[in-house]
Image (cartoon, rainbow, N blue to C red):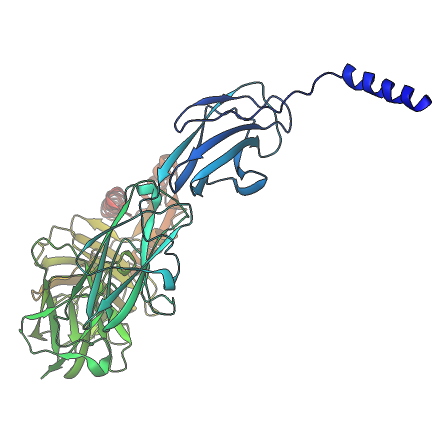
Length: 550
């Protein structure tokens, strides 16, 4: 009886319970349909379902996201979590139903909604998957190829056959600049055979080779990338010619075709000089080609002697010249030929070489020195002697660029090679006061370039400091030069040469006082000449000070 009572009580309690509510299914989203998402509680998730009818890629998009949120998406199928999307919201999906859950990366909340939608990009590449050597897609040379870099980090491999050796050229056209699509050649083991780039040229032997298409920064695009593979036969019979032993022999004034191919190629040429002189290089590019070259002159061991010179002094005997692209890192190359020619010009300046203090050419003052500034950046040194303090005057009197063009620079150096300061310049004429001793002049072209095979003329003359006037007491007044040691030294030389004295002052009142002292000490018949010379010296000093140029 008690049992029956308990059963009846249990039945009544069960009937009194509210009926269970069915679990709500996540709403189904259509591709491209924009929905508002509100994550107003920490840890909250929003979920939708999508139906995929064919293989392709699901792309998650967000818009108008509050600054406090970092929304992400996760793809599920049933109870299985397939992929958790963070930076790259792309998922490769087979046909079926999927759940897409939207949440915040840090479980943050915001009372402001944002927009969310899903796009579908169908799988257009029938060769996928093709990210391994064993899965590489076979292609034919000369045929256009399209490929898709999906999902992020996707790599597509291609296999091609070369029946004969030659230069393989690969051209890539990307649908977007921010995709940073690159291509790289591989061997059968997957090892790189080239650098990576958007355009490649690589010399390859006959046989099977591979190419890898990828995004530099794991980007992706729903638009296809186009590629084209082509083969160009070797046109330069002298290749390989990038070592001294294999250098191509050329004759003087011979027009030599050559190619900088592939990118980074360097061509060596060997020449024989019957006598010492200047080798003059000229290069004619193919019309429409913009390729900057750098010439390098080498010794027999292949070490660079000079770089960037188009005129080089060469001794009698064998020499080496190497031509390369100035911007090798940019992948510059010449598919069409360039033409080089070497001419040998005789060395007419018997004083060469004179580009160091040790080899400086000895000259006499009060004469015109003739010389040539070749090759580029050539420097000529000249040595002269002064037996007594003197004023040295220099001036270019003839030059290819014109004596008034300022195309040449002139420096005076002491016996140790240190620059002598405080040169006064007036137009193209320079003045400098020097004590007795050994000095050098250094002449060079202003900036880059050279004078060619025309002569430069330089006048170097001297004037004695001593004034030949009997009965004159010499006093030189330096006004405002206390803080100019170089000028003080030159004034002291002038005063000493005339057995006089140098008086330094910084005010015109003190200058007037010196005149009064001199007038009082002057003997009858000598004062006027003394004052005249004093005034003339002060005027000359002021004139030079005004004309002094840095």
